[in-house]
Length: 339
Image (cartoon, rainbow, N blue to C red; front, side, top):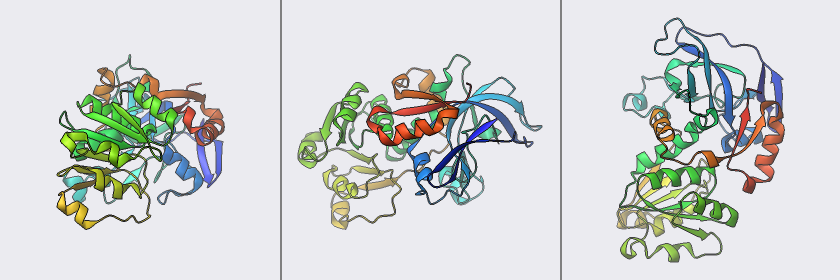
């Protein structure tokens, strides 16, 4: 049995791992496919404030149940599942009001506790979501990244009356765009990388703008009867974008923030109040993976083209190198633990 561990910042290794014990309320999952996320790279670089080392990373993974704990019902060996990596206490104020993704005692698999980049992992049964037997396991492993998009768009609201401006055409931007389009919105995507913008058009973007070349505020001002976009989301995690987002948003508009930088940004109170803007933070997902699985299995999204490369798990170092050095060639790299 192997695991992909960040032993210390900048030191990623494929190591031998022990079979985990299975507690009463857990299921043992044989991991088949797992996706690499930008937050995995942050742990690798030592820039994630929540990670402790050594850490088996990986929070986007799917596989097959091989054992169920004594008190578990509803699952059996052989069931294919995707795992929600968000582990919450269920008792604190956020949990009581349905916001378990910001639980006061939050633990995320692959960050606060060891994750799914290994052959076998024991997880709470409540975090396992069944997949249909015919659902490709790689598609199942995309449920978690799409749940991030589902969360921000449930927080902000998004429907046919919206014109959405997305900053960032990376993996997060592409998933948010697809869910916004599924909800009937018009979507404009801004990014400095022209190749990424071409890719966004292929996924259904209505309009693309080149950041740093196009005058974004001027180009989006004519939207919504000259009022600007009704919903603006920073999918790039750049603090400086928040000021522009508030400036270009329509009166009564909403602004979604997905980045995790501690850096301050300058925004005008006046800009927020005069247009009565609403600002939303969004972190992880609040039990939305079952809904996302329905979307994926119902053909409402375009997941196949998201998977740009697949590496054998033993070649994780090469996969991370590609992710870091040639981001324009990748959307989602997955590790195959079945090989």
